[in-house]
Amino acid sequence: MNDLIIIPIIKLLVIFGVCMLFITYTTWLERKALGHFQLRYGPMRVGYHGLLQPIADGIKNFFKEEVVPDNADRAVFLLAPVISISLAVMLLAVIPFGDSFTLFGKRIDLYLANPSIGILFILGFATIGSYGTILGGWSSGNKYGYMGGLRASAMIISYELSMAFAVVSIIMVTGSFSLVDMVAAQHHMWNIVREPVAFLVFLISGIAELNRTPFDMPEAESELCCGYNIEYSSMKFSLFFLAEYTHLFVFASLVTTLFLGGWHGPILPGVVWFFVKTFIVIFLCIWIRATIPRLRYDKVMKLEWKFLLPVALANVIATGVVLTLFG
Amino acid sequence: MDKSEIIVVSRGRGEKGNYVKPFLKGLQYTLGNFFKKPITVQYPDQKTARSARWRGLHRLNLDEKGELKCVACGLCAAVCPSQAITIIACEEAGDTRRPESFEVNELRCVFCGFCQEACPKGAISLTKLYEYVDYSREDFLFDIARLKTTGEKWNS
Ligand code: SF4
Ligand code: SF4
Image 1 (cartoon, helix red, strand yellow):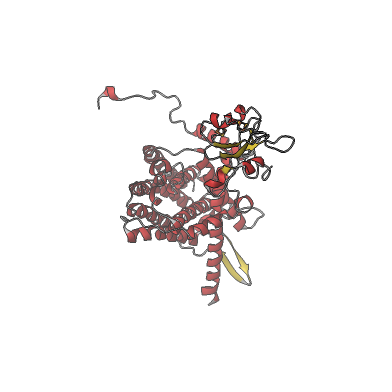
Image 2: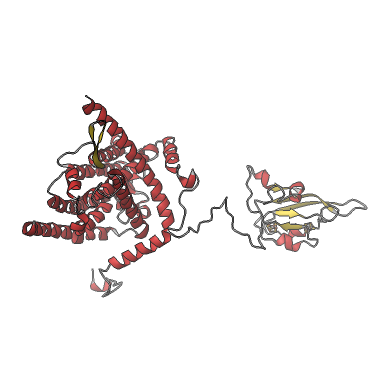
């Protein structure tokens, strides 16, 4: 009884709560860090150095007016943010946050589920999650939103490929689809050492998949004035926003899990290492965003089809050859 | 398309395809900025210095006896390019001319400082105050009483 219901519920609440807090403060970190990269301060007014800013934003968005455009497809329009956020949050379930430990004589694993196909689960649900973006753009009855949706689907179709191939080489190295096994396999050597090419491909296509600068095609402010979420206001906008940052968090924890050795690290407990590494990856994303301008649309496609995909494929083949010869 | 219509922007770029070095250079630059002190002035808490010739809200100066220096000659009103000054003079026998009403519309004023330059008595001058907010348009019509005390309420 305890093992089946109470412990999972407590775990669920703790993991969800901690992750959501982390994600909320990622928005703060992003604004703050972007500010400092550009010699500004970022939020300063609400709380000490703007620390309460995410909360203030949340409250503000609660009380804003809900607007549904007249020529929007109402049902889909309302559904899109829900798809986005729910599928994004679902991804948190399979991420291994830390080593298992014993509490009151019970073994507690620091993840909610460990399906044997964990990595496929993440890839699949992350892709379905982008339906929120696509549908949101298409249903709002706005040309910018429509363009944003189109571009989102184009991005998903292309960058998913190289990302998956990068993951394939990791699967070949660790010999398992389960994220927990993948972390365990990196006990002696992190995968970033064994698969540096896959790491780079995964990082680039991940940032593209997240629709972050320099690949923020679906929400290019200067061309589409916000892209797919242009007609969204109040809480619906917040949900999109939150989904985006949840995806960022999941992506960062995936990089940590697949390449940076997950919870492995000296001295500090595993969970701390996990969050430190995740934080570093998120910071790297923000850093890149602060540095490079948006690529032109055709260049984005060229980068994927003419560069990343062949490189990822070649890497898979090379990994296979090396494994057969020396493994 | 005809070959001649194609505009070649650049040809044979030596560094074509070399994105890695500029990219790393950019990252280095932004990280350098990250650890520098931001150049933002946190305005309401921190203020920048005003120049000595700064032209802000008007003030009517008083002489030693505490009377207005102004003799209601009307030069400032005449020179004002935006007609922000309205003066009604008052002349009584045995007394110096003085303004009965002197009104500066701070919303019309473009803070050119001509009034200050035109005045033969040095009676009107522009202070360095630039932060003035209020609730209605009427609040920006400064009469004698307010012009006499400009800056005292908010004085630094
Ligand atoms: S500063 Fe210029 S615009 Fe303003 S009242 Fe004086 S003369 Fe008129
Ligand atoms: S302020 Fe000076 S210029 Fe204006 S009416 Fe008075 S004395 Fe004349």
